Image (cartoon, rainbow, N blue to C red; front, side, top):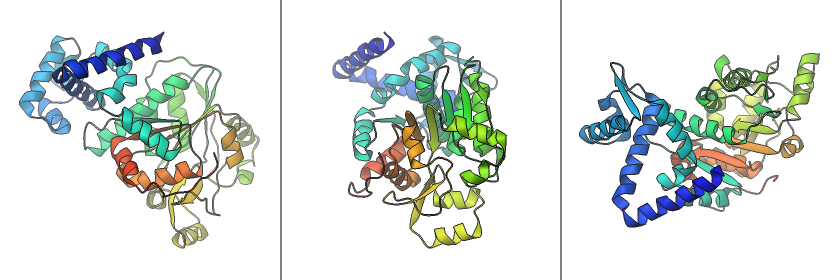
Length: 352
């Protein structure tokens, strides 16, 4: 029923665009401002105007209108959204591509990368922190559409995954969902490790979680304790895997690699890392990986969701999709534009 309502609303948007294009433009501006306030609020008018790249007077007029509609409230701290606005934005998630003209880009990118579904998060600001937050919100929304009680959710670590964990609405009661990390304790920042992301997601969802008490090493070494063996067994039974994609330069900065791995990386043309595997531009895995899940294990997971954004990650995203295509890719506008501008011949077919 909900999908039928969304489809009907999408048709209505097409009619509005055809008959009253200026109304569609107003709708897009209001949607952009609501999304930005949700990501940054409470925020002042001047700061908001700078983030959405619109004149302060225009921003003020739109915000005044939204307040009259009961969607925005003002305080000494700045502007923030009302519960009604948050509910409205949740309803508009499936229409965001149309509101921002992204549907065609999503279809083109899905075809280019051989991915079933692509969701492009809006970039309503050039501020990296806001872009990351909006990417996390898009990932949280996608997860909310597919996660159900009784499922096992496997997650990796990283800044984008941490953004998803922070964006998940709290107060849900999914007691029968189990969240498990798909990596060990890689990296020096505890809050970005897979264990921390799994725990925070479980807290927001009202779910349970298990941890891997180990550094990020080989599967054989991880299975040294009964607790880890039990967690690995659950990981291999995951219903959904949500994972990030990183560039090798990021991994070198954030993760402790053994000297021989650093040397091997320096001698290769590796550009991407995901799930413990290091990949070249064609999506070929290098022989220094230490992922806890084999490719065969990954192929058995019913739903694989990759999430990564930023133009600087375009090559890494293309390589990761060539190596192992996710069922769903969540990215942002800048990454999507860079990916569509790449040479279509780049990359090679990996496991599918």
